[in-house]
Length: 106
Image (tube, rainbow, N blue to C red):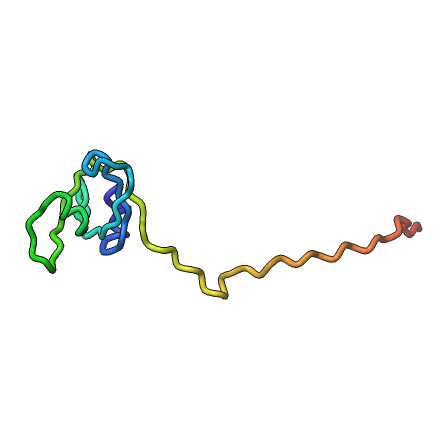
């Protein structure tokens, strides 16, 4: 799993920590690193809930073990494809003209 998470480093993720937060609702945070045993995140909301001392203008990194995580999903908005990659609406094909079923015989 950690190799897949590497693509989301320094991006927003939604992580569900039901036992830690007491709710299955996902927490939006920034993934800053991943390890074999868990992930490092930045979350002012979680730092406040856990009462982690910190300077007013800084958010401390928080390690979350995978055993505490119900799910992780990307919280980034998917990028729209460029207009050239968007398929034009399909045009109906003209119906083939009916041909007579007579054939030339020799």
